[in-house]
Amino acid sequence: MSLGVWWLFVGMTFVVSATPGPNMLYVMSLSARLGVRTAVSAMAGCMTALLAMMTLSAAGLGALLQSFPAVFDALRLAGAAYLAYLGVKCWRTPVQGPDDLPAVGAEKHLPLPPKAQQLVPSRWAVYRQGFLVAASNPKAILFAAAFFPQFIHADLPKLPQFAVLLATFTVIEVGWYFVYAVSGKQLSVYLQRAAIMRLFNRVTGGAFVGFAALMATTKS
Image 1 (tube, rainbow, N blue to C red):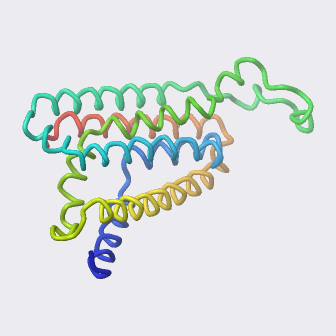
Image 2 (cartoon, rainbow, N blue to C red):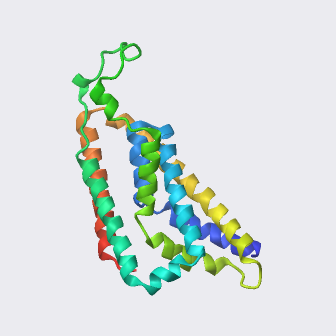
């Protein structure tokens, strides 16, 4: 792989990763509600799923799914159903008003009420949900099967080239995760009011349902 080919891959991956999708939306919404540190667990879950799917693609699963459209369609519809479930769950997320918060100056001394504690997921739960959000789109396997080979020189060892491309993709993808996470954190200033938070949850939930509808109706 020449340096020019690698830079072409960098440019194309930069644009593809920047495009808003379920992964970026999940990271941004989580950062807006719970902060960047919590969103890092979501990033790790998303990247684990993406790396696993791309490795499976390199192993030939992408070609297998193309050969058996029924299997791909079943995975696609299952992923769409999960995104729709996530959207409905986000839409219905309970929102605390000012009366539910501790008095000023007391937040450092009083524990959160049991109901509020249940609203904060564990890092493992965030990681697991990030993994499922990324894994819900089997088109990532087909994308990797069609995209990566364009930059691999057929006469050179393929494994080192694939490793370089995968590492490059990881750095760019994680970089965009942090861009979206920081953007979400900036939104948190406006989410202190219950009405704004409720609107944010419904817009986010609607977006997930929209992604689900696109995934369910768009063929490979």
